[in-house]
Each structure stands twice: as C-alpha cells, then as structure tokens.
Amino acid sequence: MVRGLRLLTVGLLMAAATACGGAVGSAAPPGAVAAPTSPESSPAARPDGSPVPAGKPTPGRTGAAPANGPSRTTAPASPAVPGCAARDLTVAEGHTGLPADGESGWFATPIQLRNHSGAACRLRGWPGLTFIGDGTIRACAKGDPSCGKPLSTSGTRPFTITRSSGHGVPDIVLAPGHSTSFTLVWEGSYSCGSFVPSPYGVDIRVPGDSRALTLIPATAISPCEGRIEVTPFGVVG
Image 1: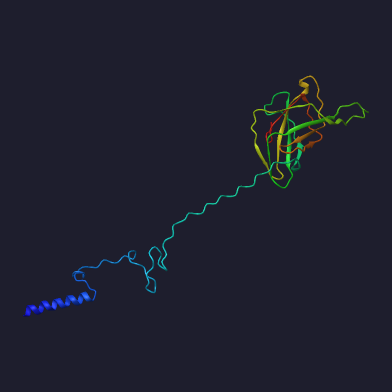
Image 2: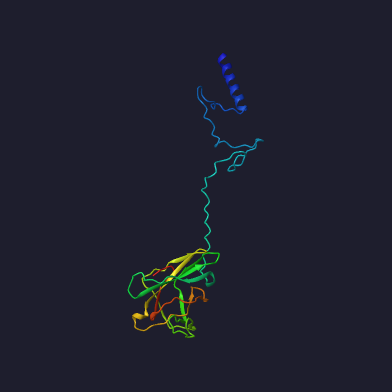
C-alpha cells in the first residue's frame, strides 16, 4: 500500500514538470559548473528586446577598424625650365688666351651669355654663329679717313664653323643674373702666312630662337683660313 502511494506521487511530480516546460534529466548534476555563454554566439538584442538580424552590428558596438597606411600622393612635377631666348640674354666678349691644351699658335676666346630676365632659363647645345663685316683698321697712315673705322658693317664673312670634339654637352640652367660661356677656338692667321681681318660683328643664335644676339664690335679674332671651332654652352675651351 505504501509503495503504491510512492509510485503515484512520483508520477504526479513528473507530469507536473513536463507541463511546466521542464525536461527531466536537463538539470546539471551536483557540483557541475555551467559553461559561460560567448557573446559572439549569443543572439544580439535591441534595447526593446527584439533580436538584431544576423550579420548586422549591435547598436553601440564598434569593432576595430583596419589600419590604413598613409595615403600615397604623387608630388606635382616642377614646371620644365624653358629654353633661353635671345631677349633673355646679353652677350659680352671674354679675355682671349691660350686654349686648354696650350697648343702654340692657337687661341681661345670665351663669349659670355648672361640671363638678364626675371626667370630661370635653360641652355643646352651649340650656338649658331654668323660673322659679319670687316673690323676696324688700327694701324693706318696719318690722315687716312678710314683710320679707326670699320671697313664694312655688313656682309657675311665666309668663316667655317666646326664643333669642337671631345666635349660633353652640359645642361645649363641659368638663374636670373647668372652667366655661362662658350668658346671660340682658332689658330692665328699669321701661322698660315696670310692675314685675315677681324670681323665687324657676330650674330649669335641660341637653340629654338631664330632671332640673334649681336656682338659689336666682334671679338678681335684673325682665324687661319677663316676656320673656327666652337664649344657647347657651358664649356670653356
């Protein structure tokens, strides 16, 4: 009788647990510790209790942003320095002396170009040269009306201009007020046994400009058979 009552009591208790949604055997055994719930594995919820759809961040939660390196910028290229024009330059004769190799009978006459403009300009290459007229007669008879005057101020002299070999061609950037030179290298005409009168003037052209710089009076050169070598801009022979 007593045993029957115990079985009935147990059955009633089990039925009550099932009706309340409990599950027999789901309780942790004595002494067991429940594993903590991972925030990442738990569904997020809004403040009002409604779930946040998967894949969207929880409001108020910020993750670490990926580290970005400094943005790469390409520095703007400096504007190209324009070539010097005739109007940017003034011309003057330097002191005639022996050429760099010191060969007897040869002379080197530097021609100086100065940038008188307000901006830098570039010179690269070789000058174009046209010699004109006949220079002044310095030794003349007393009372000669032509004494001290040029024989002619026009007409192209048939000089042969060649480019000196053995020189590199430098890239010259002339700042305002700065100068560079090129050199005329020539053999004295007395070495050839026939005097060549000096020119009255010389027209000098720089690359890219058809206008000429005119040096008057021209340097007092008397080149053998009218042959003259010229160096590039920036080279003193």
